Each structure stands twice: as C-alpha cells, then as structure tokens.
Amino acid sequence: MPFRSCRIVLMAHCILNSNTRAQGLVVDSKLRGGAYMLVSEVLRLGYGIEQLPCPELALEGLFRRPMTKKDYELRGLREVCTKLLRGLVDNSLKPLVRDSIKVTAFIGVAGSPSCGVRYTHIDNPLSRQKGMGIFTEELVKALQRLGIKPLLLEWDFRRPYESTEEVIQVLERVL
Image: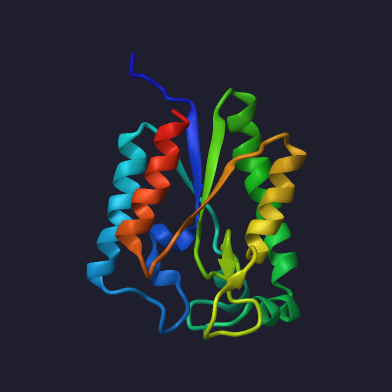
C-alpha cells in the first residue's frame, strides 16, 4: 500500500498559476522555474499541496491592474476572502483534518495585498511594508477556528530561488 504522509501545505494560487497575477506582474518563463523548483521540493519532501483560490481574480477578474491592500479593502476583497474561505474550509480542510491530515504550512507571496505573509503593498504600490495581506489575515482566523496553527511562510517572485531555499529549509525542519 502506498505511503500517505498526512501532511499538506496550503499554497497561494498564483505560485502554481502565475497567469492569474495582475497585469504587469505575470512572470517570464525563467522565473517560473523558481516556482517549479518550489513545488518540486515541497512534493519531494512528501507534502501534499492544496492550491488556494485567488481572491483578487474572484473580485476583479483576470485583466486587473495591480492594487494595494487599501485599494482592495475599499473594493470589498475581505468579504470575498471570507466567502472563498468558507467554501475551502467546509469542502476541503474540515474533511482533511477530520481524517488526520495535518496542515503544516501556508506559503504566501511576498508583497501580495492578498497573500502576503510578512510584507505587502499596504498603501503604496511601489514599496512593500510589513504586514499580512487580506486573504492571509482571514485564512489565519479561519484556521484558528479549526484549531490549526500552520507555519506562515513567504515565497517571493522577485527572489524565487533564494526564497525557495528558505521555505524548504523550514519545511525540512518540521518533518
């Protein structure tokens, strides 16, 4: 019988599908190699990957301009996040946790107004500031209600190879 690791990481949508990033932020094929390396290494360690929905895509569609956290707050992104997370929790996370799957980590995206973990564009589209994105804030609350406290890790499209190494080092330590 195949071995089941019983560990998963939650991953920001655009790491697995960079086509969903805002206009001007879609990465070229050289940088997509960094995302491929991240995914490959996570799988090599035996983790399953749960791709999270993209709240920016749900709210604004594919052809949207980059916005700040404040912009998205005013446009109602927090409500979209809450709605998306309700479905994710009920349809995926609760059954997985009930059946002894451990949600080990969330891998967010540096600078994202939605999925930033340590840094996001809060009110200036040109500079990152300390703070979580809206989706990350709501995800943490939803997971806390389930008694889940995952590691909060951040992957960076600007530093794909370095940030992959940082994320993998942390995931290796918790095996």
